[in-house]
Length: 396
Image (cartoon, rainbow, N blue to C red; front, side, top):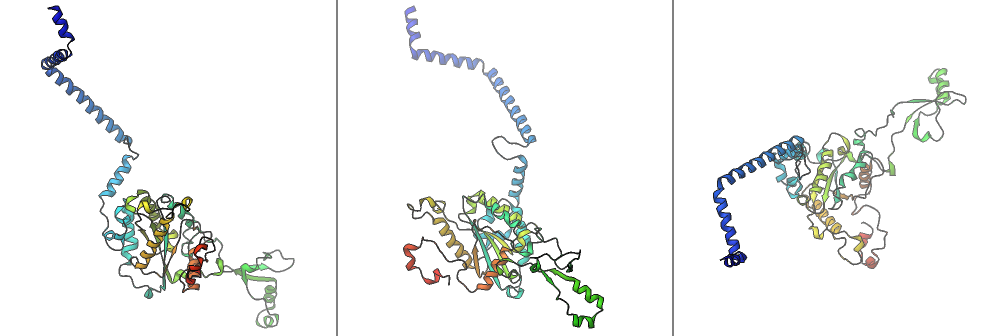
């Protein structure tokens, strides 16, 4: 009856069952047509994807990344290159940088310039080398990105005289050229200005009694009217000899507080410095070798929080542990036998030329010593000053 049909229509179970059956009948009747429509849609999507990928590749851009196809190809090319064998041997295997960097070209240059030529080299003593110094340049996670900037001044303030010509700091004047200065009161020639006497070394004034006997009188008069001088050799600051590198060897260590393989920024910064070092000429001529080493301090323990020094006892744990690690690395002899090391932190910025020559001159003038440098003059040791041994207080 009509009432029963109405009640069946209001029954939700029967309603959904009826809709389900109708849907099944529709798909059975139109199965072939739906299959063709689906294939047509998928074919259109595939064609669109292929055209879009081809256009992106031609423009050199891949959506969702920051790398062009050229960079990706270079990275892929470097990844295909095998690492040189020396990175798996001591001492290089002790640092993860050599097996983690993606710039294989740097490792190849290092092998050609630094590793291979030194195989079978005579001992230091036979080559006239009497001392070896290691310069440790420590850096941590937060200043890894700025590391190359701290080396920028090395191009303008040359570390040693050996790099002077390469970096363009050599004087244009010829220091060996003799110059005649007009000493006559009313003379019109070049005058030796007052205050410049210390910059020139001149012939001794003529002795008229002997001059008249040994040379014509005209030359004697000329010697009294003119003074022959030449520039004195360059004087290097702090009254320290600047030729110590002739008998010394210096190696540069880029010293990371954590682990290179866990920080791409640290590796890229070292890559940039290594690239400059292995380029022809420049400040690299002042150093025998360059190395990348690490302290392997866990990230959660590599702390330097000056603002929390009153509340956190380990606020300076990172620098302290890194210094200990650096001391042990140099002391172990793994990278070479060194007479000492200089911890050149990031705020140790050269202010004059030939600063490395002066450091070596200071070492030569004051050795033997335990610590070379100014004595501590702060107040942070006051609480335990009486317990500090004299050897530490006076660097003996």
